[in-house]
Image (cartoon, rainbow, N blue to C red; front, side):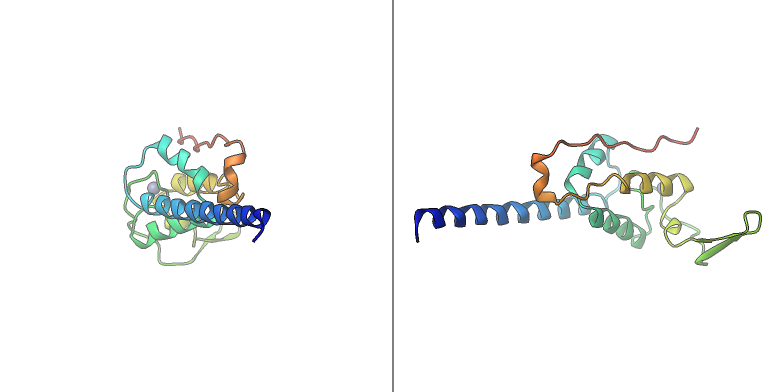
Length: 142
Ligand SMILES: [Zn+2]
């Protein structure tokens, strides 16, 4: 093998190792976000190290364990409506409750959607070259 090939091979291996490490780190964060009591600053910092599908996993896993889907909320899910749709006579509309039912309140649902929209789509292992955005929480209802 020539020296150039040797070098390319080393670069390729380094890239694979980096990619695997980034994926493993994202998985650790998913597990962490299933636990109660995460500080706001810690939560926001974690968003830079996960992909959109990781965030969706967190919400779904929390729902399965009967916790509010929003990672900053420690409420249990209680009195979850059985029906899939809700009909609003006043607005003459049918609402799909599938996503909303994963949260204890309208606020948590909106706050989670707000976070989900901010999770970067850039591949995890390419983020170290990019500037980190400043993530925001949805302000509490007054
Ligand atoms: Zn909640």
